Image (cartoon, rainbow, N blue to C red; front, side, top):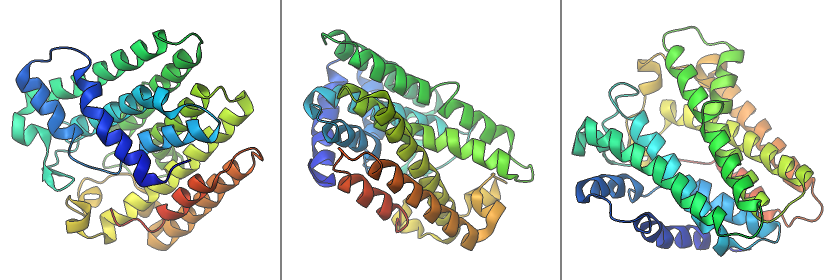
Amino acid sequence: MRDYAAYQARVEQALPDMLRSLGEIPARLLEAMDYSLEAGGKRLRPVMLLAACEMAGGDAEAALPFACGLEMIHTYSLIHDDLPAMDDDDLRRGKPTNHRVFGEGLAVLAGDGLLNGAVELMARAALSRQDRRGLQALEAILRHAGVTGMIAGQTADLAAEGEAPTEEKVTYIHRHKTADLLMAPMEAGLLLAGAEPEKVRAGGEYGMHLGFAFQMTDDLLDVIGDETLLGKKTGMDAARDKMTWVALRGTEGTREDAAAHVAAAIAAVRGVPEWDAGFFVSLAESTLGRVR
C-alpha cells in the first residue's frame, strides 16, 4: 500500500481527465464544475477507496473511476450545501463559493453535472469489467450518497434547524450526512477487490465510526477552529441553530465521544487478521488532531 500523499496525488492527476472523458461539456458549465472540483481539499474519500481496494488485494488503477466518481459526488454536495436555500455560505476552502462566482443557476447545474457525470463515469467502468464487482461498488456508493444516505441526513439537518438537540436526532444527522459518505469508499473499494461480505461489513463499520469522529471534530472546529486554516467562517452552526454534537454534549464531551469512535474504527479494521491496516489506523488517529 502507498502513503496518503501518493494516493492523493494519483487522484489529483486523474480527476481532470476523468471529467473530460465524459465528452464535450459546455465551456461555462465545465468551468463551474472545475472551479469546485479543483478547489483543493484532502481528497479523503477517493484516497480511502483506493487504499481499501489495495488493502484487500485489488487493483487501485482499475478503481480510479470509482474514486474520482465519489469525489465528484462529494463536490456536488458541497456546491449545493453552500447555496442560499441551504447553508448560504460565502466561502469554501478559502475561496468564494460556486454560486458567488457563477450565480445560483449555474451552481445548481454544476452540482447536477458532477452528480450525473459521476454516475456515468462509474457505470462505464462497471460495464467494462467481466465481473459484477463494479456494479456492486456503484450500488454501494449511490446508496450511501442517496435518499436513504447522505441526502436523508441533509434533509434531517435542514428540518431540525432551530430545534433543541437530542441524541437521537444528532446521531441520525451525523450517521447519514457525514458517515455514509465515508462508509461508501470503504465498501466500494473492498467490493472492487472481491472482499468477502464480512470484510465489507468490517470496512463499512470503520467508515461509520470514522464518519462520526470526523463530524464531531468538524463541530468542534466550528467553535474553536481557526478561520484562516479552515478556509471558512466559524460560529456558523450556532448562528443557524444547527444540531451539532457540541450543542448536545459540550466541547469536552464531544472530544471524548470522538475519541471513542476513533477507537471503534481502529478495532473494526484490526479485527480482520488478513489486512495490513496500518494506513487506516493512522488515518483514524489523525482525525482527532485535525485543524481543517
